[in-house]
Length: 318
Image (tube, rainbow, N blue to C red):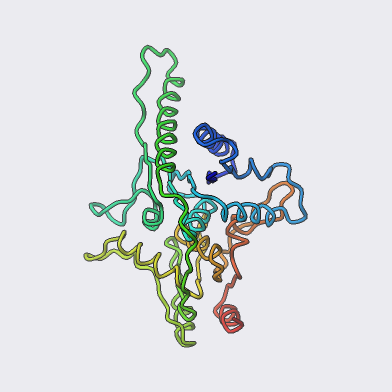
């Protein structure tokens, strides 16, 4: 029996409801036992553990190693970093991932240039298929309640998107055999935040180069006449998958999508990731230890640094 994972934002009731709705429609096709829905199936509300966040991370990670396909719900310009981490994790293991979105926006580097479905073109590269249903359904005839009519017009695309994504997932090639990733031990990949320019990364590149590392930085957000973001994103992903060391910037309201994808891939293949401390506030939830990032990000990170000297100490200790 194949096992499918529904990855979704889960901090608010409406996001959990959407995940449950999609999981239920998938279960009608493959059976309830073939579908894993985080939060629901880890009993996150009532789970008691001395280190609950880490336990939830371990439960989700254990399931990610057993699934045959993933359905990921992605919507809006600020994508859930936990979902993006799970996508990267699955993709690195050769598991097909189908994304479903009802976002009516597309994204690009400049007006008149090529656009992609999500804020980071690396997602379009990593995903097996993107199902996007972004237009309202026709209004119902003779509806006296305009709010009920508007709800109807929004629920119909959600249903259509879910069903199309499920069909795409079930026709996708099943999980590929686990492949060995050849790691270039002295290759480093640096993923800065696309939201924040920091001199730290120039210093980090110089530090690693001086210590004999072959340093690579992403090119997909560089706006040049010759640049094609999808091609650059594919190259960024390929290089990142063979790096012996990865440095990421988690700055922003959530860890940027590309960084989250790469963190997930590194966690799946046992490669170290060091994160520049974003200096953001902590989050708190009943019964769970405080988190400095999404718990899927927090526990996948190998270490954090705020200064070059701290980074140097971490690199030299490896």
